Amino acid sequence: MIINTREEIIELTQEWKGERLEDGRPKVPDVYLDKLRTMTLEEIWLPLYVKGYHFQYEGGMKHLHNEKKLVGRAVTCTFMPIRPDLAKVVRNQGEKKGWEGFFNQWVVDNLGNGDVVVADMFDKVYNGTFVGGNLTTAIRVKTGNGGAVIWGGIRDIEQMKKIDTQVFYRGIDPTPIRECVLTDLNGACRIGSAVCLPGDIVMGTESGLLFIPSHLVEDVINSAEKTHAKDIFGFEMLEKGIYTTAAIDNSVWNLEMMERLIDFVEKDDRCKKYRGLDWSLELGAAKGDPKCLEEVLKTCLV
Image (cartoon, one colour):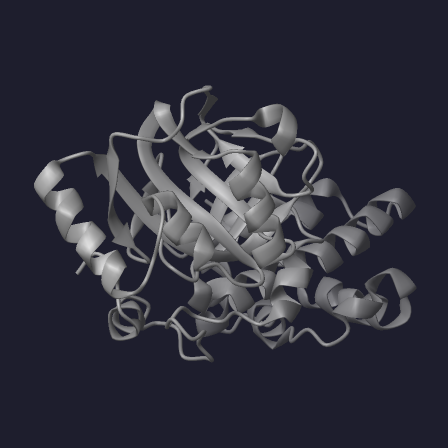
């Protein structure tokens, strides 16, 4: 009901068809997480946006460490102001599982490698400090290179800054967490204007936060890699005066440009990691195939 079961999490994330973690969350392969660490948020945001996912970004948060990217699998939780009868129900659920401590400790105690806490604290900073020095240390130990996103407060920031774990948060306050109750663990969670599901891939950079639906991770990475390859090629062509900026910026490249691009990718060492990309859709569009043109234009922000 409040602590979602494996079956409930699977139903909530039914678009994911791959392997799952023990709790039921999608297990996006580590290789994709590694690739995301080399990409920018903007490169990933665009293919999500054109697919209709318009509420995956939030830019109104602070972060603990500069120039440290956060990438990991979401463990979501939602809190509300305290209500005694509700808190009793939630505590009973936790006690049946043998969980101890306050509700935020339950969440941290259930983290695994590569996880990121995504906590909606209803923007509560005073008495809403989800993590401090101790829990940030625990997150570091349990998740490795994971972290936390807190739509609320943190405390002990001087201690936290000494810990190599990225945390996004709304504000700082010396008060401990109190007067709130966990109402959902591993359910749909709102962070500002963004929506996150359990197992989404959290991407946090200097540009803000992006919550990538698990079933779209491979697609958006593929799109971003194509953009990388085209950028390398495009800059080279512009420097040599072979193509104009208008030609490079065109949503659909002509056949001569596409064939030159594919040859460039195969021969230029800067594009070595992009040599396995499938360009058949773009080639079809270049040849004027209506279906290919339609699909390519769907990936463009117009």
